[in-house]
Length: 306
Image (cartoon, rainbow, N blue to C red; front, side, top):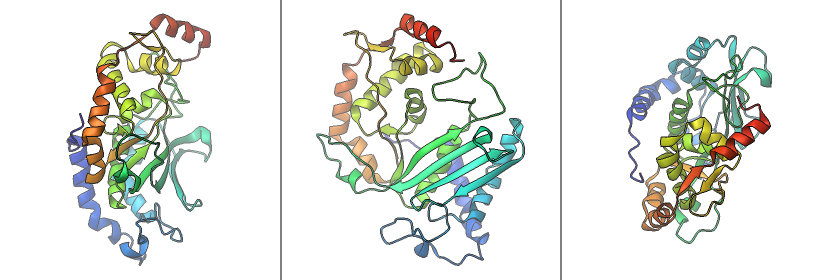
């Protein structure tokens, strides 16, 4: 799994789209005279005096993206109306993109993406992380994709942390963010998922910096996902009902840093003998399962997970 074969069908599709859009982006912003060198500081950081999203994207370019990717057209098919977006650049270091359906209020929020360009905060590890320490990433501080016009059902039950059902566009959003991260010259995307099921969904392309957490994630995908639904695994993780079969102790899952590499230096970290050896050490001794009786007891006590 540590060999990076990121050129899947979806990646190739967005590679082509972004290549086509390169010349169009700045044709649409001819009234804005900053060059790429003006926009980016010598260190590759954001020049915070500019009014550009992530220090790079003019609002007209965001308009172009929304049209090119048919974002509002798709959201309209889900019953969402009066769609509009807002860019919040008031924080010099953290930029926010939101889409609303109707009023500008949380109950009508469809999309919220909070991004920051920064280095990683790394814990001590027994092997070399110098390539990571020197790198800058596009960090996804917050990602919300929801349909406030829909309700949960037995067909689409609620997952931990959800207020409304999702939009089923997560993979597409990640591809767009990947290419945006590439454009602003970062080493990759980074995120710290708060929930186990979110980490599983992210791990289609993201990897945990901590090899022990990556081993846990692969065990969840390699065994639990073959025997249980995502809903069951999500709530089992939330209520600590996943356990080690050899000891009977609950699995300790904690929010941990994940990365989708772009630069070769970051890919080398995951392909290093140290990382792969540590990963195999943890994975080989890991045997986990879901305590279904305990999970059902927890669900009955709460009574509101659907």
